[in-house]
Each structure stands twice: as structure tokens, then as C-alpha cells.
Image (tube, rainbow, N blue to C red):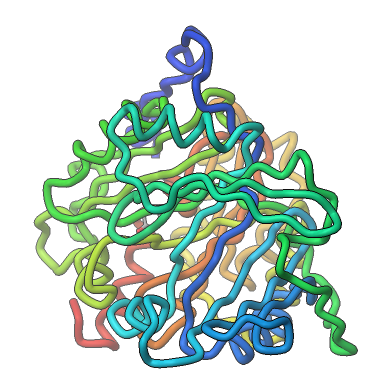
Length: 386
Ligand code: TYF
Ligand code: FE
């Protein structure tokens, strides 16, 4: 573990030495999935992940080509959108990729400036600045194309005080399962194709002004396990983090390659959601039917006190309780973190979720990679994709 930690390069100095930020991002506004059946997907995320009904747009609101359900939990907002006819870019997206993330909406002060600054720096346009309005004010949105067919949609809502976006009505539902304690999106990871890592690192640097905050190379995370490289890109204030994975040649088929094959291209691999009580959150999610990767072996948990050495005094959780749920623990110079991963949430082995509780640590769980990738490989084995 200490070897892995030493080879972690923190790039924080670079973040703070920077000139003025040409793309100030206030946060993740929402994430929109294109799915085969939005009504059922919304029900799944409400039931299993504890989201609440928020807003709706579709036939009943005068929209003829799509239906969108907005669900919310604390600061996390997910939009589930489906096509209402065969002649639809949404349907095309679902046909090619299966259910997956289409839009990452980034909350900005000035969407026109965000669009101009990024397209000037080489971003491919998805949609020019568009104003929509209703009695609650106006929203400006403009999109650029990121990896694969994924869109980053700059969203300015300072002159809007409606529920979500113009065109949406409140989704009244008597069915509101209790939240499970998910608070905000910690990071969102993209899988890119062979030899595309540097292209996308440069894209995040040049187009968005992000910096490479952490790197894990294939020598660290190849060994016997799913081979991949990973670089974490962060924005000026370090709050928005987009790790990027690229497959690497290993003894077995990389989990990243498996994703690229089944998603039929690059895209969002996992969404990490933060909680401040991971024991409760994960116990709740399991009780509601969310499937997590298998529990790491006893030897993994035996090594935890050694890994936590410097932070043992701060460590509040009971290792046995964590082990029962399969939650993993890692530490870095600044603290520790607890994390666990779901199995893919579709039939294609593509998008999955991570639940993370940071107790000071700013890393991504490098010390857990071995155990994590072994769990993923057990799933790949069952799928015949290893
Ligand atoms: O976001 C991360 O970097 C961690 C670890 O295929 C990780 O959650 C890295 C690669 C991967 C799954 C998880
Ligand atoms: Fe992650």
C-alpha cells in the first residue's frame, strides 16, 4: 500500500498557482441518462437508491418526443429521459449504448462565456447557447461534446427560481421511499479508448482549464489484475473531479475494454456519490435490492489496521461492521476514506455507482485497487468476458 501511496502524485500546487479561472464551475447541476424506459428507471432509483420525485416533462406537459423524470436526493439530481418514437436521437443513443449517461450538466454563472471560452479552446459544439423561460425566469444552456457521445452542458440559472427547468412541472407522487443518505456527487469517471488518455487529459487541460490532480499508471494497477491507467482531472477549486480510465494490456481482458465493447464507445463508467454514514447508506441500499461487488477476502481486512496506522486514533467505524457489508477502507497522508461499488446497474456491464465517505482523504482508494479489481474480475469471469 505504501508503495502505491508514494507513487501517487498530488498536483494541487498547480491548481492554486493558476491564473484566473476562465471556467468557474459552481457544481454539478444534474446528470441526464438516456434510457429505454424512463418511468421504470425512475422507480428503480427511487426505490433502491432513495431518490425523491422532483419534476416531470412529457406528453402531459405538451412534449411529444420524449419523457423525462427528475429525481433528487440532497444535492444530487438525476434526469431519466426516454424516446417516445423510433425516429429519435434518444432512441438511437439507447440502441447503441444501452442505458447510460448522456448529459453532465455543469452549473455555471455564465453559460455563454463558458461556451465561448471552451469552443474557442477547441471544444466541439453540441448545442449553442439556448434560453428557455417560464413564469419563474430563464435558464441558459449550451453544450460541448466530451468523450464518446457524452455532453457537458453549461447551465446558468441565476435568473431562475423554478423547480428545475422551464418546461417541467412538479412530479406529484404518493410514493416517496426514504432517502438513504446520499449527499452529492463526489466524482464522475469516464472510460476512453486505447491510447486516448493523453488526448483527453489534454482536452480537460486546454478546453476546460482543469489540472491533472492524481495519476495511477498501468504498472501500479496491472499486475495480475484488470489492467488500466487512471488520471484524475480537477477544476480550479478542486471540487469538480473527472477521473479518466484507459484500458491497458494485461494478462486478462481489461474491465475498461469490457466497458468499451458493451457501451460501444467511450462514456461515463461510474458515478461516485458521497454519504456521511456509509454503514447506514449501504445497509439501506442492500435491503432495497442494490447489488454490490463481492466482499474482499479476510486477508484484505486483516491488513486494514496497518494501513490506517496514522489515522487509527480518528477511525470511528467498526472494521467488522464494514467487513460485513464489504465496505473498503483506504488511507492517505490527509486521512482515510470508505468506499464500495455496485455491480453494473444495467444488463450491459457498463455504468455502475460508487458510494464514498471521505474522512479527510482526497485520494481515490489506490490501496483498494487490488481487492476491487479482483471483485470486478469475479464478475467478468461469470460473464465470460475476462
Ligand atoms: O474513481 C476511482 O478512481 C476509484 C477507483 O475501473 C476505480 O473509484 C478506478 C477504476 C475503476 C473502478 C474504480
Ligand atoms: Fe471512483
